[in-house]
Length: 547
Ligand code: GLN
Image 1 (tube, helix red, strand yellow):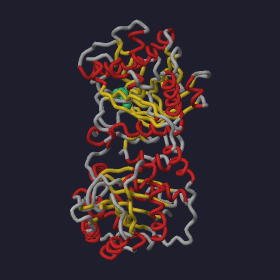
Image 2 (cartoon, rainbow, N blue to C red):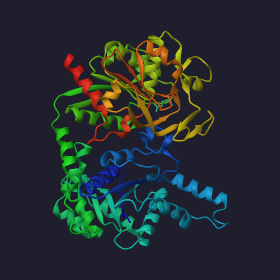
Image 3 (tube, rainbow, N blue to C red):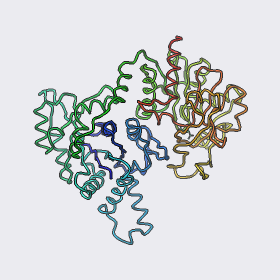
Image 4 (cartoon, rainbow, N blue to C red):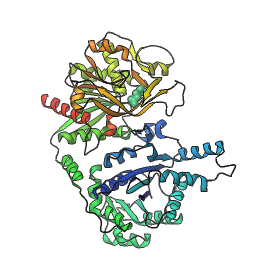
């Protein structure tokens, strides 16, 4: 039976609970334990799939097709453990399950209440897979005291209470603000936050304190005393230069030791931190720099493309170079010559996206990359744009476009080389879908196999001809245009196993031009950079040597 670690936050939001949880997971792995990480989000949306990337950052997709919070991306990048549908839940999902059960009559006419019905549903969620790992780390979104978070806090309190003693611990992350006028770190907000937590029956075992300054011994003692936590369990979480420093930094501060002590695991197995030492060595001893332009829509908010930014960093680590990613709003290229902006970049990446806005600019970016021989990686919508560009400018189909944009505009303007997919095969069964289905959950989601053509560039990059990658899209490149496009040099080098759905295109007459219908960035790790990103950055390094 797994031991449970609940990670909560206090004082302010955005302190990096997700990162702290992920880093703690990595440290427990380094001590030889198996882990799984879980996120409980208090918002009422049923799933994050339909939330705006502007507000909520990217939607992270799991192998089994769940659309989740970007924190699950952190978890995977730090632990390498593939997240599952059952690793993320929101209040909205919990309530909707409870209400569905009520409608079905499962509660036999009883009065449905937050306690016990909602809290039971949360506890059931926590229990799933509890016998598979040594440690289950559960992060509660938001901060203690938020109204919508209360059922989660109550549920974890009950959960710990119902388990044998010593099987669950609570780690609380707070902030120690620094007041310049008095030159002091202030402990009062932390004291209040812990008080709030204790008032709902949860006593933290470990405190993780974010602060811009070293925490003096005196303050540590004071916090231990006032918050009723052992002094060794008051851990500093200093600001870091890069997120990948977190496992080593938190280890130095004693986080994993404090957690093992709280569980009375003694003697604690010695940690092997070589994976993280190597990652840090590659980050800090990078030589040279390449510039990659990311031509997209949500350029103001970096979190909207979090996994892409991280995968590029990993690609840099693989080549021991720094990758400077710069975000360019695609719409600019609808008014101005892309050359003005894209000259000087060593590679161009067009990420995924939805809707027509900015797409003509992305097509022009693809054209620029093709004509100038600049490495191009098109992801999902970025692949579709590369295909439309090839159809228009190489295969003489000036009105080539995507059905997505016609649907949006409510009239037919394009020859749909990219069309709306209404049925496909998943494993052994057929999935069917109508255009008017619910907004959430109508996409081809999760891991699908692709078969790569022998001798293609991608087969060489992957070192394999069968791959599995994660998808999140409604529209597909129409295989009926394959011969016509291949005759012009755009090779369909990856296909679904039944040969109906194009998964990868590559331009044969170009140094490095690849479009993929899936999201390779979701599977990249700092200690195992994704081959496509590693090779894309390698190509960028080569370009940088030419100029
Ligand atoms: N909008 C496109 C589709 O639905 C691409 C999606 C994406 O880039 N994730 O097919």
